Image 1 (cartoon, rainbow, N blue to C red):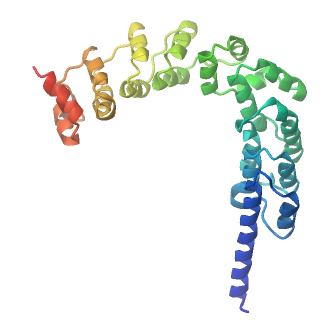
Image 2 (cartoon, one colour; image 1 turned 135 degrees about the vertical axis):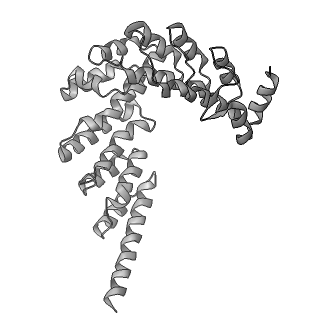
Length: 297
C-alpha cells in the first residue's frame, strides 16, 4: 500500500473516531466506557474546537465533563473554558450548583483561571436579583465585591433596572459606574425608556449619539424620543434621521416620518442629494409614496 493511501486511510479513521466521540458526547446518556475507548483509540478531545466538551456541557453531564477535562479538553483551547462557563445558561438550578462548582474547581486546577469561568454565573445570578448567590460565591472563592460587580454586563444591568432588583443594583453601583455614554446610547438604541429614565434621573442628561437616535427613529421608539425632546434634545435636520424614517416606511409604516415632521422636518427635505419623493420612487417604497400623496400641499 502506498504512503499516500496509508495516510488517507489514517485520516478517514481519525475523522470517524472523532465523529463517534462527538455523537457519544451529544447523547444525554453517554456511555463513559465508550468515550474512554474512543479517546484511547486516538479520537481528539479537542476535535472541532472542543465540540465533545460543548456537547457534554450543554447536557450538564458532569461525569463526562470530568472525563474530557482529564483527557486534556482544556489544554490550549480557551474556547473550551467558555463552554464550561455556559453550563449555567442551560436550565441551571440550585440542585446542580455543587457539581458545577466542582467542575470549576477542576478547571481552575488545570488553567489557573477563575473569573472567566465565573462571569456567566455571576451575570445569571445578577439578572435574577440573587445577591445572596453572589455573596456565597464571594465567600467561597475569596472574591472582592469589586471583582463581582466588575464583570456584570451592561445588558444585565438594564434587566436589573427593568425588574426592580434595587438591592443588587445598589451593590453594583457601589463599585461600578454605568452612567456612561455607552449606556445612554444603548438605552436609546434599544428603546428602553425606563432605563433611560433612571440614567437621566441619577446620572443627568447626556446627549446620545446620532447613530443611537437614528436607530430609535427607525424602530419607532417614540417614548425614548419624547424623553430626549423633553430634556432639550434638538432633532436638527440631520439626513441620517430622515433616511431612517423613510426606510422604516417599508416595514414599519410612516409614523417615524410623521414624528420628524412634528419636530421641524419637511416633506420637501432631501437626503443623499435627493428628495423624499425621489427616494420613494427609486426604492418602490409604496407606503411612503401613499403618505406623501396624502400629505401633499
